[in-house]
Image 1 (cartoon, rainbow, N blue to C red):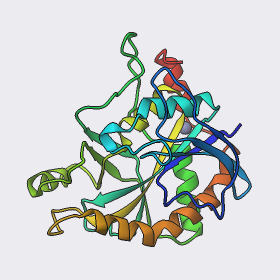
Image 2 (cartoon, protein in one colour):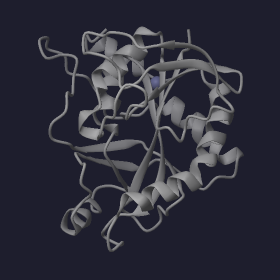
Image 3 (spheres, protein in one colour):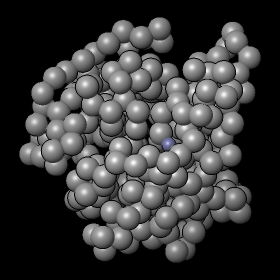
Image 4 (tube, rainbow, N blue to C red):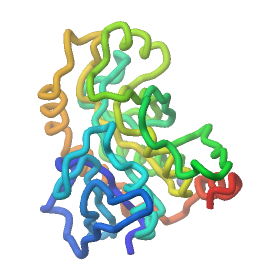
Length: 260
Ligand SMILES: [Zn+2]
């Protein structure tokens, strides 16, 4: 079974480079995942692919994504590494539309999600570095090799959505973060609870409303589709490197907290 999972949207899924070998739509104690999980190969590397916002089994906006079921299902399939592809807004001038950001921190401004697997057991997971440094190194190395414009490290502000920010919020967030999106929380922390390595490959689609007059979904979609090729090439270059010499403490963080 694949050790690597990709969570992304329909754009990131490229039927031309992904040969499907199997499909699963498993039950978990937290319900069903957002889509059928496809397994197959990208650049010769076996991966599982999950559509975060649904595809064949419904449509899930950021607040309604079954995050716990998604991460649990991937763990059940044997995945150790989770790579999230997503679109984000920029909160800083130097994070320009089209840039790729390999986030290294998040701030949680979500309000109504299922955040943990431990509602009935005392487990305090340690998460000072929430994203896996090993995966971040692999993908920043791949971005360098491909001469992509990328940022190794970035503070991701996660908001509830589905609305975008007000100007007042956007100016406030600029004091604390570099990019803004709606999906890293709780995905990232659930991965840590399950002892899985997690990284986020974020494409900047717009300057948030601190700079833009307004952000609309068409603007986001347009930039994302222009940049999809970059993310796909990044995956093709980085995926074969995963598992060759892991050095991170994602599993140990879960073990020492009593989560595994
Ligand atoms: Zn790790």
